[in-house]
Image (tube, rainbow, N blue to C red):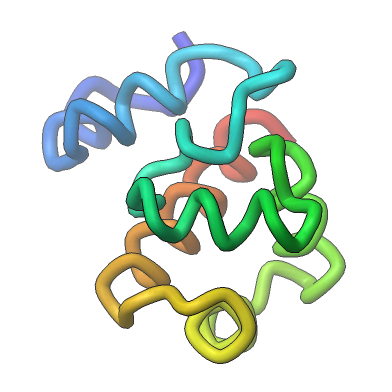
Length: 98
């Protein structure tokens, strides 16, 4: 299974595990761990309607979590908690699938 060992998966939230259990495909941005309903609306408004579009932004920032989190907070209205959860989710997805 993607994602390495079972021990790695044990510390993850069910939502994060679900996201990592399959390719990103056409999933809406709201599937990404850490994205609340309100944040999803903000992201969709800015054109980040799909999880892969948000992943693209993360990759454009060279997977630099601090920079990505700052962007989410400053430009998209994320809380610090949401920004951390979201960047961790995308980082974990990259380590599974890239």
